[in-house]
Length: 201
Image (cartoon, rainbow, N blue to C red):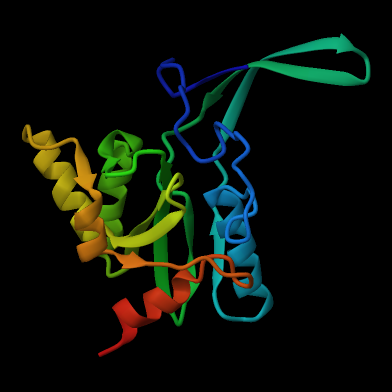
Protein backbone atom coordinates (compact mmCIF):
# COMPACT_ATOMS: atom_id res chain seq x y z
CA UNK A 1 0.00 0.00 0.00
CA UNK A 2 1.28 3.48 -0.87
CA UNK A 3 0.88 5.81 2.12
CA UNK A 4 1.60 9.48 1.51
CA UNK A 5 2.01 12.71 3.44
CA UNK A 6 -0.09 15.83 2.69
CA UNK A 7 1.31 17.18 -0.58
CA UNK A 8 1.85 13.72 -2.04
CA UNK A 9 5.31 12.83 -0.70
CA UNK A 10 5.51 9.07 -0.15
CA UNK A 11 5.81 7.88 3.45
CA UNK A 12 8.94 5.73 3.75
CA UNK A 13 8.24 4.80 7.31
CA UNK A 14 10.58 5.18 10.24
CA UNK A 15 7.78 5.13 12.76
CA UNK A 16 7.83 2.31 15.22
CA UNK A 17 5.17 0.12 13.64
CA UNK A 18 6.37 0.61 10.07
CA UNK A 19 8.87 -2.24 10.03
CA UNK A 20 7.93 -4.99 12.42
CA UNK A 21 10.76 -7.42 12.04
CA UNK A 22 10.84 -10.06 14.75
CA UNK A 23 13.54 -9.59 17.35
CA UNK A 24 15.31 -12.44 19.06
CA UNK A 25 13.29 -13.26 22.14
CA UNK A 26 15.05 -13.39 25.47
CA UNK A 27 14.03 -13.04 29.10
CA UNK A 28 14.37 -9.25 29.05
CA UNK A 29 12.67 -8.41 25.77
CA UNK A 30 10.74 -11.45 24.55
CA UNK A 31 10.60 -10.14 20.99
CA UNK A 32 8.50 -7.04 21.67
CA UNK A 33 9.00 -3.75 19.85
CA UNK A 34 9.31 -0.48 21.73
CA UNK A 35 5.78 0.45 20.68
CA UNK A 36 4.37 -2.82 22.01
CA UNK A 37 6.26 -2.40 25.27
CA UNK A 38 4.97 1.15 25.69
CA UNK A 39 1.39 0.21 24.85
CA UNK A 40 1.49 -2.57 27.45
CA UNK A 41 3.07 -0.18 29.96
CA UNK A 42 0.42 2.48 29.38
CA UNK A 43 -2.35 -0.09 29.81
CA UNK A 44 -0.76 -1.10 33.12
CA UNK A 45 -0.68 2.57 34.24
CA UNK A 46 -4.33 3.17 33.27
CA UNK A 47 -5.61 -0.01 34.92
CA UNK A 48 -3.93 0.93 38.20
CA UNK A 49 -4.82 4.62 38.13
CA UNK A 50 -1.17 5.72 37.86
CA UNK A 51 -1.43 7.78 34.65
CA UNK A 52 -3.63 8.13 31.58
CA UNK A 53 -1.46 7.93 28.46
CA UNK A 54 -2.41 6.79 24.96
CA UNK A 55 -0.75 6.42 21.59
CA UNK A 56 -2.07 9.14 19.29
CA UNK A 57 -4.02 7.90 16.27
CA UNK A 58 -2.75 9.15 12.91
CA UNK A 59 -5.61 10.38 10.71
CA UNK A 60 -5.45 8.78 7.27
CA UNK A 61 -7.41 9.59 4.11
CA UNK A 62 -8.06 6.47 2.01
CA UNK A 63 -7.82 7.22 -1.70
CA UNK A 64 -7.99 3.89 -3.53
CA UNK A 65 -9.40 0.54 -2.47
CA UNK A 66 -9.45 -2.70 -4.44
CA UNK A 67 -12.01 -5.43 -3.85
CA UNK A 68 -10.40 -8.71 -4.98
CA UNK A 69 -13.46 -10.51 -3.64
CA UNK A 70 -16.71 -9.43 -2.07
CA UNK A 71 -15.67 -10.27 1.46
CA UNK A 72 -12.30 -8.47 1.38
CA UNK A 73 -11.10 -4.94 0.70
CA UNK A 74 -7.45 -4.00 0.11
CA UNK A 75 -6.30 -0.40 0.62
CA UNK A 76 -3.99 0.45 -2.29
CA UNK A 77 -3.34 4.15 -1.67
CA UNK A 78 -3.79 6.47 1.30
CA UNK A 79 -2.54 9.83 2.58
CA UNK A 80 -1.83 11.18 6.02
CA UNK A 81 -4.39 13.97 6.47
CA UNK A 82 -1.85 16.01 8.38
CA UNK A 83 1.72 15.68 9.59
CA UNK A 84 1.88 13.69 12.80
CA UNK A 85 3.23 15.27 15.97
CA UNK A 86 4.53 12.86 18.61
CA UNK A 87 3.57 9.29 19.44
CA UNK A 88 2.06 9.53 22.93
CA UNK A 89 0.33 12.00 25.20
CA UNK A 90 -1.64 12.02 28.42
CA UNK A 91 -1.81 13.18 32.03
CA UNK A 92 0.23 12.31 35.09
CA UNK A 93 -0.34 13.99 38.47
CA UNK A 94 -2.21 16.86 36.85
CA UNK A 95 0.53 17.60 34.30
CA UNK A 96 0.29 17.12 30.54
CA UNK A 97 2.96 14.74 29.21
CA UNK A 98 3.89 14.30 25.59
CA UNK A 99 6.62 12.14 24.09
CA UNK A 100 8.04 10.54 20.98
CA UNK A 101 9.37 6.96 20.97
CA UNK A 102 12.08 5.80 18.56
CA UNK A 103 14.31 2.79 18.01
CA UNK A 104 17.67 2.44 16.27
CA UNK A 105 19.96 -0.47 15.42
CA UNK A 106 22.95 1.86 15.71
CA UNK A 107 25.08 0.96 18.74
CA UNK A 108 27.02 4.22 19.23
CA UNK A 109 24.65 7.08 18.35
CA UNK A 110 21.01 7.94 17.77
CA UNK A 111 20.42 9.35 14.25
CA UNK A 112 18.45 12.61 14.22
CA UNK A 113 16.92 11.62 10.86
CA UNK A 114 14.52 9.48 12.93
CA UNK A 115 12.79 12.72 13.89
CA UNK A 116 11.00 15.32 11.77
CA UNK A 117 11.04 19.11 11.98
CA UNK A 118 7.32 19.32 12.78
CA UNK A 119 7.81 16.95 15.73
CA UNK A 120 10.59 19.14 17.13
CA UNK A 121 8.45 22.27 16.74
CA UNK A 122 5.58 20.49 18.49
CA UNK A 123 7.86 19.60 21.40
CA UNK A 124 8.94 23.23 21.67
CA UNK A 125 5.30 24.32 21.83
CA UNK A 126 4.46 21.76 24.52
CA UNK A 127 7.38 22.95 26.65
CA UNK A 128 6.46 26.60 26.11
CA UNK A 129 3.07 25.86 27.68
CA UNK A 130 4.52 24.10 30.69
CA UNK A 131 3.98 20.52 29.54
CA UNK A 132 6.41 17.68 30.20
CA UNK A 133 8.02 16.57 26.96
CA UNK A 134 10.67 13.97 26.24
CA UNK A 135 11.78 11.19 23.91
CA UNK A 136 12.07 7.51 24.76
CA UNK A 137 14.99 6.10 22.79
CA UNK A 138 15.82 2.43 22.39
CA UNK A 139 19.10 0.99 21.13
CA UNK A 140 17.46 -2.22 19.94
CA UNK A 141 20.62 -4.27 19.31
CA UNK A 142 21.90 -3.43 22.80
CA UNK A 143 18.42 -3.75 24.33
CA UNK A 144 18.85 -0.44 26.17
CA UNK A 145 16.14 2.19 26.62
CA UNK A 146 16.55 5.81 27.76
CA UNK A 147 14.35 8.82 28.52
CA UNK A 148 15.84 12.03 27.12
CA UNK A 149 14.31 15.41 27.93
CA UNK A 150 13.06 17.25 24.85
CA UNK A 151 15.24 20.28 25.60
CA UNK A 152 18.38 18.26 24.89
CA UNK A 153 16.91 16.72 21.74
CA UNK A 154 15.82 20.16 20.50
CA UNK A 155 19.28 21.62 21.15
CA UNK A 156 20.90 18.82 19.16
CA UNK A 157 18.36 19.21 16.36
CA UNK A 158 19.07 22.95 16.11
CA UNK A 159 22.81 22.28 15.98
CA UNK A 160 22.22 19.83 13.12
CA UNK A 161 20.16 22.46 11.28
CA UNK A 162 23.13 24.81 11.58
CA UNK A 163 25.44 22.22 9.99
CA UNK A 164 26.39 20.23 13.07
CA UNK A 165 26.41 16.52 13.84
CA UNK A 166 23.47 14.48 12.51
CA UNK A 167 23.21 12.16 15.51
CA UNK A 168 23.36 12.19 19.29
CA UNK A 169 26.27 10.11 20.62
CA UNK A 170 25.18 7.29 22.91
CA UNK A 171 27.58 8.45 25.62
CA UNK A 172 25.76 11.79 25.61
CA UNK A 173 22.38 10.07 25.98
CA UNK A 174 23.83 8.08 28.87
CA UNK A 175 25.09 11.31 30.45
CA UNK A 176 22.02 13.52 30.02
CA UNK A 177 19.30 10.91 29.67
CA UNK A 178 17.90 8.39 32.12
CA UNK A 179 18.24 4.64 31.68
CA UNK A 180 14.96 2.68 31.94
CA UNK A 181 15.48 -0.99 32.79
CA UNK A 182 13.07 -3.46 31.21
CA UNK A 183 10.73 -5.11 33.65
CA UNK A 184 7.75 -7.44 33.64
CA UNK A 185 4.93 -5.18 34.88
CA UNK A 186 5.26 -2.50 33.76
CA UNK A 187 7.52 -3.27 30.80
CA UNK A 188 9.09 0.21 30.59
CA UNK A 189 8.48 2.10 33.80
CA UNK A 190 9.07 5.55 32.38
CA UNK A 191 6.67 7.16 34.88
CA UNK A 192 9.09 6.41 37.73
CA UNK A 193 11.72 8.37 35.75
CA UNK A 194 9.22 11.19 35.08
CA UNK A 195 8.52 11.33 38.82
CA UNK A 196 12.21 11.58 39.64
CA UNK A 197 13.15 14.06 36.91
CA UNK A 198 10.12 16.38 36.78
CA UNK A 199 8.46 16.16 40.19
CA UNK A 200 11.28 15.74 42.71
CA UNK A 201 12.23 19.11 44.19
